[in-house]
Length: 247
Ligand code: NDP
Image (cartoon, rainbow, N blue to C red; front, side, top):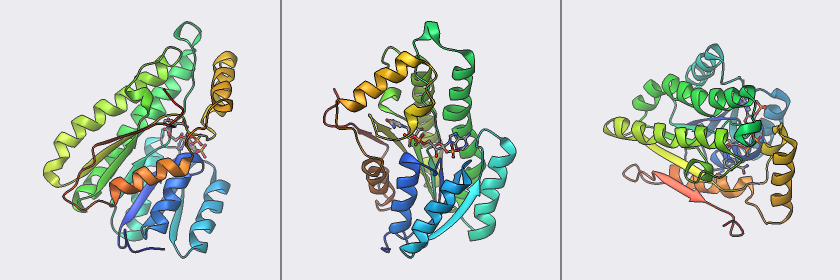
């Protein structure tokens, strides 16, 4: 464990797999105490054990971030345990790809409630603590939050929403010395595609993954670590990171 983020407290949502898991591990290795939140507790247990094995400090929090009660309890638990919150990584999300004509309202509602509304709610719950700590908010959007491709309308709507929310938020909270970073990854090899309900869309994603060298979750974690590791005067607002193989 290095001392780069010594004394800092981080909270990562969606830490039970993929980008969130890799980011939590990277923040812990950089010396932050890290609260890891998601619904799959067994996966959080394994991650916490991994962090503790390298001499890091982790706090497991079972939370569905679409639940107001869970969000309040999650933020409350971090502050009760460690007395502060310096870094919030809003990462939990789903990508339920489908052409609009075939999309289900349930899939769209799921994405809006998780990718956008829950990110907004977690931010709001954490904001008083982040202001007190002159902290840092990292919102995981996507290349799909900058480039709207066919077959991804519902997902793009949520990720463009994250970009808009983050930019407005940045211009509100900079005066409190709270930094805001949006991360926009291209294709990353994770469990994200597993939940797609549209068979053709899922096959299309699998095909793309089979024919290109995608990013790893660790590649994205390194970009997040770069942003939060800067001196307090440096506000890295946006990082777009694509696989070299991606157009
Ligand atoms: P994963 O499916 O591996 O991770 C998603 C995480 O979100 C899991 O830890 C999951 O945990 C958590 N999650 C899902 N629903 C909830 C919920 N209701 N409450 C709390 N946590 C929840 O995918 P990725 O790591 O790829 O995705 C992470 C983020 O990165 C997402 O926002 C995604 O849109 C974004 N992204 C991913 C890209 C990719 O190509 N993979 C590209 C660009 C952006 P659990 O199920 O245990 O609750």
